[in-house]
Image 1 (cartoon, rainbow, N blue to C red):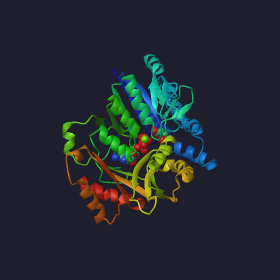
Image 2 (image 1 turned 90 degrees about the vertical axis):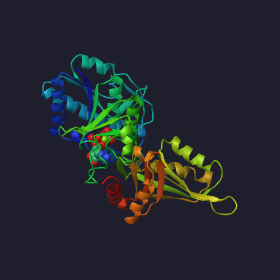
Image 3 (image 1 turned 60 degrees about the horizontal axis):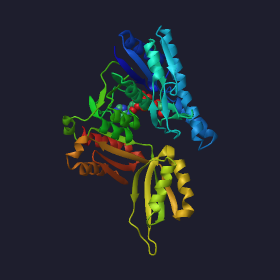
Image 4 (image 1 turned 90 degrees about the horizontal axis):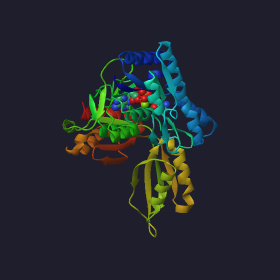
Amino acid sequence: MALIVQKYGGTSVGNPGRIKNVARRVAACRARGDQVVVVVSAMSGVTDHLIRLAKEIMPLPSEREMDVLLATGEQQTIALTAIALHALNVPAVSLTGAQAGIVTDGVHTKAKIHNLTPKKVHELLNQGHVVIVAGFQGETPEGQITTLGRGGSDLTAIALAAALKADLCQIYTDVDGVYTADPRIVPGARKLDEISYDEMLELASLGAKVMQSRSVEFAKKFGVVFEVRSSLNEHPGTIVKEETKNMEEVVVRGVALDKHQAKLTLVAVPDKPGVAAKIFKALGDAAVNVDMIVQNISHGAGTPQTDISFTVEKADLLKARKVIDGLKTGIGYGEVIVAEQIGKLSIVGVGMKSHSGVAGKLFETLANAGINIDMISTSEIKLSVVIDLARGEEAMKAVHAAFIG
Ligand code: ADP
Ligand code: ASP
Ligand code: MG
């Protein structure tokens, strides 16, 4: 008898028919004698819809109230999935994140799991139930409802698999696995049989939303091997695991495009010690994640001035803007320019550690397509460029063709 954690994403539970499909798959597993813990997301579109409703009332709603609101999406699906299993005569009980023992810090909308004590889950499994856990949510030790960041049901599943020492962790979604690029944008993208944690983590952080990046980080830390596969067929998926020697033979494992970044430029910032610290400390304190940062050469007489550009998630733009506006008198910069029409294109591969010429080839490919590069950042296994959003998909196809074929 194996203990299996299965996570079904928004599209996989997107309507009653799909929920019945999930129930059939879970029932089949259980009929083979396995214990099953099911993690579900909100039905597709529900979380976005709830966010829109709140923002119609107020552009920057309280994050505590957003968590109370958003957690309802997953709560609908756990009950519906339990009902679908009951309809097949399978005993099943739904649990909210809190009931499943998921305790988080108090950073609303992006909470981190502090500990997970799945006592209730064990009890219910031992009584013969399928346990259905609401993804994406937890609670603080004080009992406040929290959510784990967009795509956070992946994290719920991985964390439960680790805490329960599950034999298998499967992430069911609406594509056959992890591809060399988003198959909806690059028709020639290929499904990967396996990928290392580090590559998956980079791809996920750089816009491949097939997995939430924090969930991959968690999986790496606790050694949870997992499979990404389709809920709509029986095709084998992609195994995500520790890097193996032969993985380095491939230079570029995948290409990602992040369309959800925005760039802020602070013009004429006094170029003296402590200014950058003030700006980025204030953003950090407001839980705004800053990604790329570029500071220009300073100019001007007296106290020289410089321009500082950085990127943040579009979802954090209003919050970042508020922080920056609050620093205007203290720091004394000129103005803020916001660019929302940007795309961040990245190539990722552990093989980049041992191969040279990758940057040159990337820049040449973009130059040949007449696409201008606005910002560049690199790490050992990735290379990212910021380009015009309108050229993003075209650039992604060209870069995929150049590196992967
Ligand atoms: P779920 O609701 O199951 O969590 P998501 O929509 O969050 O599903 O993630 C699946 C989607 O991720 C796919 O439909 C696909 O368009 C997109 N995607 C982006 N990059 C990749 C990639 N490299 N491989 C597979 N899918 C990708
Ligand atoms: N429903 C949440 C979201 O849309 C969490 C998830 O789907 O994983 O972000
Ligand atoms: Mg997802």
